[in-house]
Length: 450
Image 1: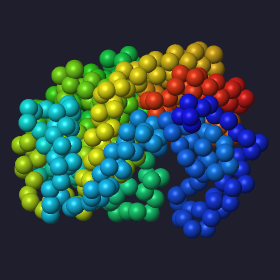
Image 2 (image 1 turned 90 degrees about the horizontal axis):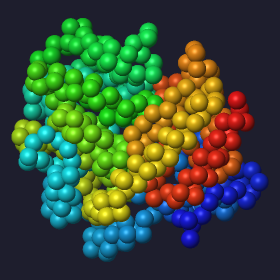
Image 3 (image 1 turned 120 degrees about the vertical axis):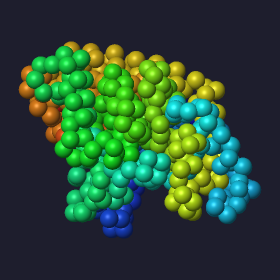
Image 4 (image 1 turned 180 degrees about the horizontal axis):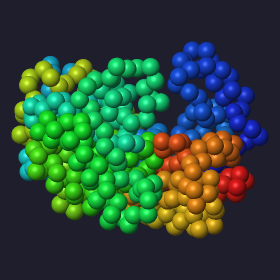
């Protein structure tokens, strides 16, 4: 069975001949801006293993960039989509009601850790759409024009979310951007200036946030502060809980909504169903959660959830869309949540994360190029540097690691402002043998280039 196999390259080098031909067709037919970094052309996939058109097997530590927490082609999700397809594909929710949409909204209202006893949910198609709609909802409820986002943030590639996203390599030549988006410094503790303690650093970053009220927008004009509980593209940087508590307090004192962007961190990835469950446990739950990626096991879907009084403040016609809450996607998502809860994949995420942190931590002790290791549950990042003393980012090394690992049958991806972080997003159904095989390949690659 493919889902139990280990990585294996049978063509000697990758891409093999069949894959090379498809990649050449891709280059001729698809914009070059959608880059082809990896020498893998999928033929079939199960669990954490991809088999390419040449018969090579790749172990997937990327998981569709956080889409495949329950793995490739989970048989129960496949069956749920097949069964739904036999009844109907689609019915626009503004025109007809289909029960899958309602059932999924009810389930998310039950399990998502937003403030308020009565919650409401609606659906879009992508993470960027979810974030944009979350901002619209916050503006409708508060009647305020502005939002605050953070350094290192990634929220999407629509016009608004490009403005919200920090790294402007994702938005070259696309301005001018929408007004009313202001940026504060995210608490990137590994790169805090000076020699501060963690407590001092938290206070420093809280003051940086407060300065936005003086320099950019008065607090009473801010609708929402938008935070990734664990930054994805920014470098897998967890938001420290004491800082989140301080942000929650600032929001409460100023009538600002706290919005958690859980597009990448949701559905078991961090050891909880949502990373903001950690916030809820610390008494600082968000007002709005946006989520996508692993919600439907690979079928396009995203969700926006808030307490009822926030959602009901939105004027009719302002939110919605043709494909949001598509019947096939809702069927997949209901089954995904069932599998995560039944098979205890949040607990499995914690086990995987512990194994990774132990292994990565040993690399940090042994290798001068491993500067920092951080994460939550099975969402872990390794930051590579030129040396520990200078902490100079080493994006060149991560580029070499990606190619070397791919040549041995392991798919990994970088992240971070400087592209110097390797992120771990393997499916939570990965076997122990597969996990160890992948970690071995990655360590051998590190040793090759140090």
